[in-house]
Image (cartoon, rainbow, N blue to C red; front, side, top):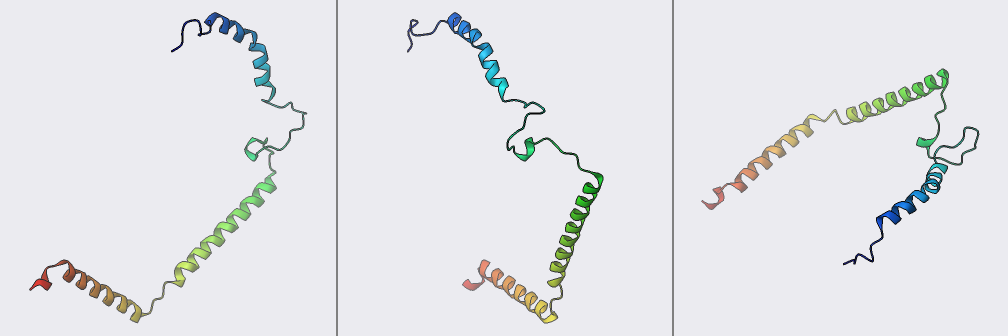
Length: 115
């Protein structure tokens, strides 16, 4: 436990903080916004200033995006349709297997085998 002599005087701490105010403000302010003509080093993309695109560039980008989305839709459609035509025999076999499995599970979960 601290004794009162060990604790710093709040008035002294306040005086020290007021004395260092200008220095701290300079340190905090120095790295905020660069000057307009000052060259900046590498910055992450979200901090870089935006460069406006021309209308032609915007339209080109949208055309490419639309093309990508259409190609993806075609791929999805082809993938879905490739699994579509199941043979009739295959469907019957699956249904029969499902029926058998259902019947077996009913027997397994009942007490019929005890009789």
